[in-house]
Each structure stands twice: as structure tokens, then as C-alpha cells.
Image 1: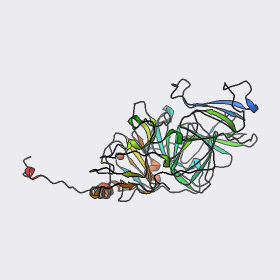
Image 2: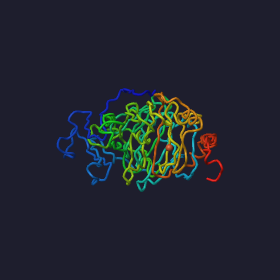
Image 3: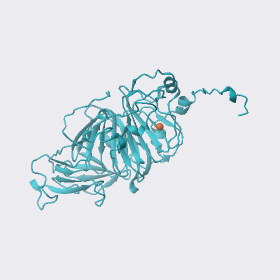
Length: 448
Ligand SMILES: [Fe+2]
């Protein structure tokens, strides 16, 4: 589990680089040279363009890939709506209270699609605005001939427990706790769980795509470095006979279509629109070496920008193991109120701002717009009296935050059905805080 720096190796091969222009082919000479759509693509394949942005998006934002495949994605029967207990419209509650959830349960009975529960949402997939936050608890592999895609947004998957083996159209990705994975809008994939039940969190970005944050005076390296993001190499199956089911998440409803070939038949692809993963242990954590501590934006891994400069629809922020050395400083996060909404989760360990208990791995909290929060009484007492020697915090721990400029609503499932909401989070955390105010003698007669 997490240390200051560590990394996994897995059995799949990856191409390194964030939003790099990659080329990969499972059979030599698959990709055409000097053009994208030759009259007769190599090996009798079909060429298919896969657009992640408008054709006319500015060059620095433009994302697309060209896929060379045995049969095009279009070769399927009509999508039909399918009923789902969890993928359906839900009443959304807007609540100013601080909220916190106990660890979400494992579910041993469901595969990926039915494992995804929406906890929070703001915006609308039809308008490509906003985001949704889910927890997943998956107990078994997706059926053998089933694939899934979301037309609603990009999935940023944050595993908390277990392994997800994800076969995508563009290749295979293995992702484990303390790694993350982004599956862009439209990419078809199938999830299996080779190590048994898995659990984690998802942020679905309805608007735009995740980017690396600007580094400003930090310079040209630091935080999440571009070379540590890993895209799959092309991998294909040959199957033009078996019946397959493609499930589409479309405006938060589910639709299913039948086709008689595997969707995982891409022999080669090139472009900059693809799924990728990142090992959080590779994050280069930066902090104060003098006094106070910087805003938590210093821990941003990825940002999904809004139309307002510097303001995110969804920032993905982590709190990794790190050294604290500040002098004359209250070292935990300050008490604050934020115009942004903060949804936090815990992958492992203890989060240093909450030492009085209640914030557990696989749990969550939501501090919505202007919901006041900060260290609980135990953390405040400890940090106020601690000897300020260099201290390592967050050993074996990884907390994270989805931070949004939008007011995050809570679903009926998150508020009631899941039965994980803590009843007295606020009372437990901050009511025990005592006043330490000492009125100076000159001000003690009440006249001032
Ligand atoms: Fe906060």
C-alpha cells in the first residue's frame, strides 16, 4: 500500500504520456502511412474516426483517434431501453449540512454496470454540463459477451479495493487501489475482477476532458508528470459470429443493442483520445518548507475545467504521504468555507485532518458550497499542542477529493437507500471544540 513513492508493474504493456499522440498496432503495417482513410485499409480492416472533441476545437484542445478494426462500431441492431434499479432518474437533494458516509458495502452479486451507484450530481448530460459522483461495488465479471460505454461523460475511476481488469476497444488496462483510470466518453469496455470483489469511486465529467493542471512558478516538472500516464497498446479479438450485447449509458438511462461480432476488434489505432491509467504513488507532492501550508490545489492530479479560467467542474485532488516541516504553523487544513464543493473519499489509512474517527476507507464526505468544515476537535487539539518537528503524515494513507465549482446534489440512494449516511457528523466533529478565548485585561470591563 502507499508509501512516499512506489509503483506497480502489471502484465500489460502501455504507452507513456499524457494526451500524447500515440500510434499502436497489434499486427505490423496496420496503420496507413501519410493518411487516415485509404481506399482499402491494410489487412481488410475498416477505418473509423473517433472524435472526443468537436472537429473544429482549437488544435491544443482537439482530441481524436483513428481506429482500424475488423467491423465498424456502427454494425449493431437498434438500441432498446432496458430497465435498471439503479440507472434511472433520482430525486436530487440540495443540502447545506456537512455530510459523511460510513464505508459503502461490498456487493458480491453484481457485475460492473449494476455496481455503479450515483451518490451526487450537478448538471445535465444532455447539456454536456456538470458531473456525477458514483461509488461502485462489483462482485463478479461482466457477462462474457457484454460491453459498456457511457455517452454521458468521461469516467475517472478511483479503485479503493480490488483489481479491475478492463478490456477496452483500444487495449487492456489493469487498475488497482492507489491507481486511477480514465475511460473517455464513448470508449467501449468490459470489466472483470480477477482478484474478487472490488470497490471504489467514480467521477463522471459531463463537460470536456480531464487535463493536467497548470504548474505556474512550480516549473516544468512536478505534481503528476505527463510521462507517468499510461495508455494501452492495441489488442484485438477475432470474433464475427458470436452474439454480443453493447450497453449504452445515455442521459443516465441504460440501452442495449445486439451485434454479431466482438467490439474488441481494433487491430491498430493512432490519436490522442484514449483511455489511460496513472499510479498515484508517482505523484510528486509539493508543500511548504517555511510556514503555513498552501491551498490544497497544490495536490491536484487532474482538472476538468469549466469555462471560467482556473475554476473546475471537477478537480481530482489527492492527499498522499508527505513530510510536514512548517514552523509556527497549525499544520492540518484550516477551518474554512469554500465557494467550491468538496467530495472526499479515502482509499486507505487515516486522513490527518480527521483523527477523532468516522472517516474510514471506502467512506466519503461532502462539504458543499459554503458548508463550514475543518479539523475535528481531536485533530485540532493534537495539532495545536504538537511539537513542530519534521513529521511524516499520511503513512500508508491516500485520501482524495473531487472538488467542483457546482453545488452538488445528493441522490435518494446516497441520502437514504444506501443507509451509510452518518447521523451526527457535524455534532461529533465540531461541537466538542472549546473556546480558548482569553480577553485581555484592558478589554475586560465590557466597555470595549
Ligand atoms: Fe475543505
